[in-house]
Length: 283
Image 1 (cartoon, helix red, strand yellow):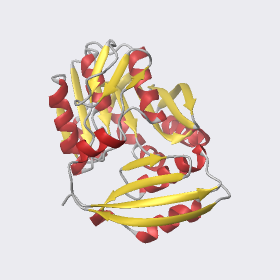
Image 2 (cartoon, one colour):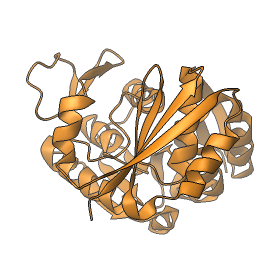
Image 3 (cartoon, one colour):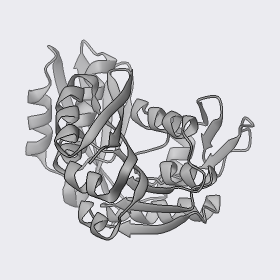
Image 4 (tube, one colour):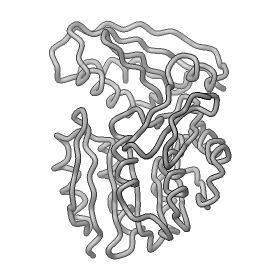
């Protein structure tokens, strides 16, 4: 099944912070793609995962004073690559060294790393502050010859970049079947041979992974905190954990969970109130 429910949320007054918060809440309810604008947010979820109660709860939990109205629309299955290409997904340069674009784009800036992503309603095109910060972390760190794990790989963008930067082994894990298929297609498009394994599942997939040099997780706060012990166990002593997908206000909570799992805080960045944090496994 490839049918989706489109939920349109108009907010008065509207702000980037408000649409970001709405997107974060809806992501936890299974929504996969978000298109914000100056009036509100359009969000998409697979039809079989749609819950009106979850949408209402997300709207009611927004901690910003605004009047929010919503409309829903059922969308029949279609060529989502084509839809993104025509309407939403435009090339983006990250960290001045990496360009992310659709395989259909022809006018693409020249960069050190050229990644083609054809998203099928899956998160991770590089436009969101969490993804772009994770990309910048990968660009700034030594990756050559290392074992890298990409949890919640989505479109596969981080796994692909790790492969391009010389990782000897990349294990990508994705829980959503649609995103898993999309990641496989994007790996093929980019010839990412360094991505040695693409696994379908959750953090339990890490039980067979030991001694990773680096683990990446761009996932929402609740999952990051719950899965922290699994992340730490997959890393070697001295290994690096890079996290994003949560707000700067939640960094203290994430840091507490990481330190309880034997991680030491290294540094963090913030963009549009979204955090990206680096940790080192100490025990």
